[in-house]
Image 1 (tube, rainbow, N blue to C red):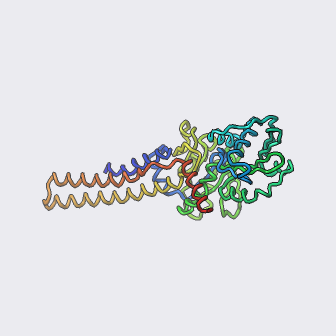
Image 2 (cartoon, rainbow, N blue to C red):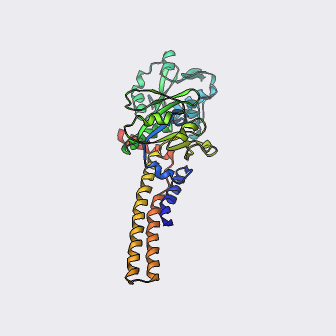
Image 3 (tube, rainbow, N blue to C red):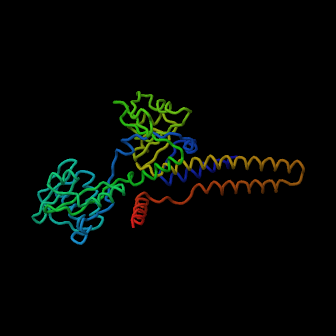
Length: 364
């Protein structure tokens, strides 16, 4: 019967490949029983790592995408960088190996944009309000904005000499992957609840379709309160920071601590070294597969054992045949279990690039 632990062993190996580290053996099968998942906003969506998804000039013949990106990077460098948008633009220009023009007198307005002087022309990089405040009309980029919005990107406009040059699409990994993740979770009949706040100042919860909208939660009673929203008993999982959300991670049926620090802190029952949630539906399906295969293999081993005893009673087989039957059974158990290992996962940036190419094909 020890062979019946092979599905769980194989599933643990598959979880390691996706950077999930179970802290106990029961965690993976328990994932299959989750009916509600609570997302701690600061840990899941609050930590932003932005990158450039697309560069779209208004007039490509007058200003190519690479020229537009180089100009934007020069302006951000002149302003001293400092925010996530500037880092994303400068990193993209560096990856492309672009030579940046000389920029001076860089200035930054927080949450709006930056400006600098390049070849005697005032160049601007920022949002629509920043452009409007400098007399730049963004109406000519309406088509570009729509295209970037469809790609789950935020447009960052670029202008020079009083003319709008184009827009750069800035996005985050979770924005690209989340629509697909959310759709998969709905297919798995898993409801989502978003929680804001912390253990000191209190927390608020919001769930799609909840009649009361945003609900204040009593300290220490967050998970019982969320369970009470359902008319039937439901298992609740929590995804949050191993330090800030330690209290609700330990309250949950399955607490998933995310981020690199999750390995240093024992909070929760499952550690995930990334902040993205793209592999969450896969983890739930893995738990369902482990439970299903364990049931099947238990029944198979039980039936084989009964059949072996019956054959021994009627003296049709000897010890050698019984050992051969057991070895064959173990081989079947091992083969079925090893299927859970699957293939190496596609890294997140590759998944995002594949999704982007697919959207471009549909646009054509």
